[in-house]
Length: 308
Image 1: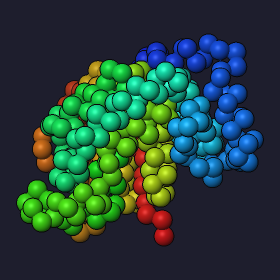
Image 2: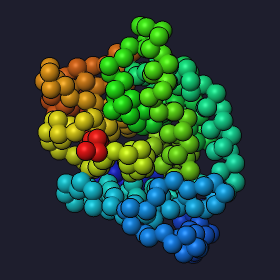
Image 3: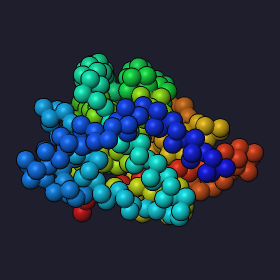
C-alpha cells in the first residue's frame, strides 16, 4: 500500500515539471553553473539559499546548494524512496522565466492581505479569510493547498515568542504580533521561486523546500521521511512540522509543539479555529487507524530548534 501511494504521489508531483526534465541540458543548469563560477559559490550545504531575481535562473542555487538534504533523517529503504521523490519534484517544479513574472504578480496580491494575518498571530484554520484567498502556484489556494506555508508561519511565530502574547484579545498587542510574525506572502513567494510548490499548487508544497526556508530563517531544521517515534523527535525539538496522509489521498501539514509544563502536544491548523491537545502524537495516528481509517500514514517530519 505504501509503495503504491508513493508512486501515485510521485506522478502528481512531476505533472508540472516535464518541460524541465525533457531538456538534455536545461537552461537553468547552464545559467546556474555560470552564476556559481562568476560568484565563487561553493556547491555545499553552506551556500546561501536566496538569490536575486535579477538572475532568474539562479533559483536553482537552492537545489544545487542543499546537498545536506540528501542524507537527512532516513529511516529505511522506503524512506529513501520518499526522499528521492521529493528531490525529483523539487527539480521538476522549478519555474520557467515566464512563470516568474506570474509568481511576482501573485506575490503582490498576497502581500496586500499579509498585515491582517500577521496582526492576528497564530492561524488555526486555513479556511478563514484572508489566508484562504491567498494564491499558491497557478491553481492552488491557501484554503485548499496552503497548509505547508501556514505551518512554517505558525512555527516561526511560536519560536519568536508569539505564544506569550494575545493579539486576538488585546488590541495593543497586535503591533507586537506583526513585528515578530513572518510574512506569509514571503513564505509562499520563496516556495514558488524555489520549486517548492507541487503541480502548480494543487498538490501542496514540498517538505524539502519548507526545511530550506526554516534554515534560511536562522534555525536548525532537519527533515525525516516516513518518520517513526514521533513523540520522541517532537519532544527533542522546540517545534515541529508534521506531514501526514489522511483518508484516501488527503495530505496535510500541521505545526506541533510539546509543552514541558503540561507534558502534552499541541497541534495547530488541524480542525476548527483552536489548537488541539494530545497526550501522544504516535497514539493520535494509531487511534485513527484502529478506528478503521487505515490510510493514516506519517510522510515527513521537520524538527526545528533555535540555534544556541
